[in-house]
Structure formats: structure tokens, C-alpha cells
Image (cartoon, rainbow, N blue to C red):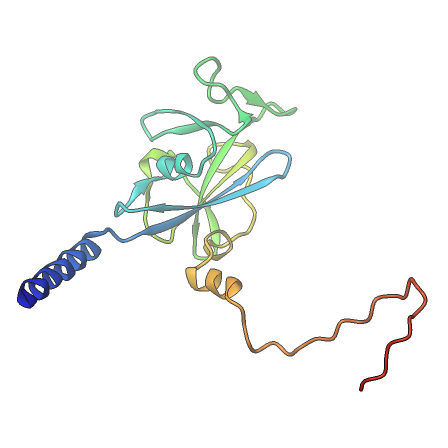
Length: 193
């Protein structure tokens, strides 16, 4: 009987090890969105696939997205409340006072800076550690409004950093709190016996 329990235990361990090994690695990529009023929204997106498209990354950020497919990939018409309501209107329906198109400019973070993407988001592959940026504003085919200067570490905090902020530390020196201001007359206390 003891051998049966040992055998069952070994099988259970083997099965659990196989399940743990079969789970796909978690990849993370970031999204930075700057709206026309200057508001900035960021999202860290986890995915188990080796890569996803830039449009999938934006859609998985949790922000509502309207896009239009074209020969160079999807153009993003609207993010959240800002943009154009394609197909009811053109994806590039907005103009500034000088007549320039106002649209969602798409960028990829490369070598510490934003690089404007000439491809639509659905044609760009996203891998672990990538950072994409979107900004609403005037522009043309060579560039537009630019997202704020953020790095992936600003958007996707590492698990170690999160654990460090949650776990209590024993290295901090004790602090003294100043006594509260007196609001009532002190009362006499009995002498120790």
C-alpha cells in the first residue's frame, strides 16, 4: 500500500511539473497614449504569443479603438473619446486651423527615442519588451504629434520592483513622531508602586 501512495505521489509530481513546463512564457509590452488635451494614458499588456500586432497591443490595452484597414496596415481612427467615428466619417476627418490633418500618429520606441511608423499598426509585430506610442494632433505622412518621453520601465514595472514596494523592509531607521498638540489640560497620573 505504501508503494502505491509513493507511485501516485511521483505521478502527481510529474504531471504538475509537466503542466508548469507547458505554460507559455508571459511577454509584456507597453502602450503610451497622449490625447489632444495632454492627458497621458499608459498600459502594460501581457501576452503569451511570441508576438502580436501593434493593433492587437493597442486593443488589449483596454482603451476603445476604432481602426480602418488599408494596404499598409490599419490606421487608427479613434482611441477612447478622441478621433473620427469611421465608417460614419473618414478615418482622417479632423483638420486643424491651418488645414492639416489631425490624426493618431503611431510611434515605436527605439534606441531611447520615438520613431514614427510609416506602417499601420496591424503590420507591425510586437515582441516582449516593446513600447508603442500614440499621439493625437496635427501632422502629415512624415510625422505628427509625439508621445511623452517614457521608457518601458515607466509603463511596465518589473515584478521585483513591485514586490520591493509591497514587502516591508527592516532596514529603515525608526522614526519619532512628534507628540500631538495638547488640547486638554494634563491630568495627574498615579506614582508607580
